[in-house]
Length: 577
Ligand code: C2E
Ligand code: CA
Ligand code: CA
View 1: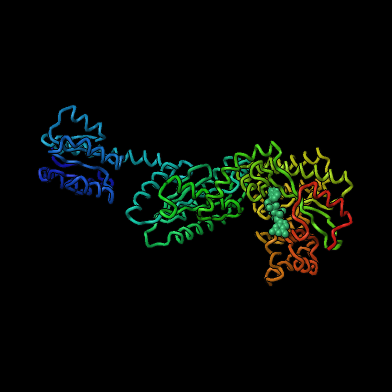
View 2: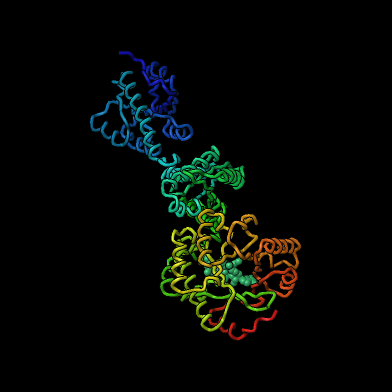
């Protein structure tokens, strides 16, 4: 029998020989010689072996030990738990059957008796170990990978995060955990079908994979939810690395994604937590990245946010309010307030904006900034949005019965309501049921609405416009709408955002912007409403620049319906300007 080992030659493999009793001197030269084809690493203590495996993992561990027979099961278990997918072969003194069995139970793959081994038996055992290590690798890759995108999966991500968190405690390295998902993915899936939704997810996965650094990993951990892990040395600026990488990913998203005849650009929300800055607990770090991502979701565009402790505070409010919202809707806790709008030519109240409030049984009157984003995230903005339209129609009819005529009544529409397939027929049903004079209703859209699936939004607006509704563009100037886009849409009114009005009399830039918006809007045949007018100087500026309508605390805060009606009845002669 030949004493030469015939190991598989296809790929250089490596063996770690932990030779506790110096047995390797007794192992014939042939073994050492043949394993030179592969990489043979020899250590003489168990702890050196562990260290060696940690730094430079070998494919197979050969544990040779003559004297510590009783300790062997313990040592094997430790090695196995450390790296479960590395096969372990034992070269041991003569063992009784039950002793050998104990080694196998402790997760050794095989054992060979030192006194009886032949190179052939050892060779076969090592070949078998290499083979099983390859099989294990394949199984692990399958176990760890997400079949749709080929990236890692949730278990893989959490395991890697856990071991990275453990190792940065000694290395001083830093980690960033990034959570990313697609804005309005559910609507995309509903509108274009799950197959196309999958295409978008796969494409996003590829763009992420192309743009991450060598020291990062990416995984898909939910439908359209990805997580990334970046590791930097103690001397690198982790925030800067994250920013650079995310900018590359965001840039790659500018390129539209094509499926079937549809071309769409995807917008994502991204949140980041850092270790050790935000803790060492893997689940908490992922949760904190998700909280930061939810903050980014408030904007429609792709945006990233780093975790901060304030986000946790607002999340406490989220967890407290979220479960109550559906009940609040059923039990009529929401109310509409009305803020008058004054025509600057006539000085009369000619319209109003409806603003929702939550009459919370314990917390008192809550303002929309504290609960509308929660409703949007939970999808509850859709039924609440219909309640708002229904209530506004009901109140409008009430005014008409009192002989009060408004030119327009603004009702805010969240961009997320366009994700509802039934938006148009449901609004139509409400209008018919309440027999509302549609020419008075003006739906207030934000610029983010127009960045969603534009064809869909335009077709909804056209259908609603055919029913007699008109539209205004809210918070104008804060987003990215262009005037050319405005021309394409059935929008009658532009509402200049309050942030420009605040300093319009002290900041030349703001004054210039307000002047330009009024002029351009008028050239396009659109009306202009200035929001947030709080003092006489702002009003004078707007009067002198031909603004059409104003609204703000200078005239009235939003008030409940009865107060609003009372005001209209009392001064039906107008509010003098
Ligand atoms: P918005 O549509 O821009 O509403 C105008 C906000 O500015 C209102 O805040 C109003 O109270 C406030 N405001 C008006 N005049 C002044 C002023 O002179 N000074 C100052 N400092 N603020 C002024 P509110 O009621 O807290 O609403 C905040 C936001 O919540 C609204 O911003 C809108 O985006 C959203 N929202 C309110 N009601 C609804 C609703 O029925 N549906 C939806 N989807 N969103 C709503
Ligand atoms: Ca508004
Ligand atoms: Ca506004």
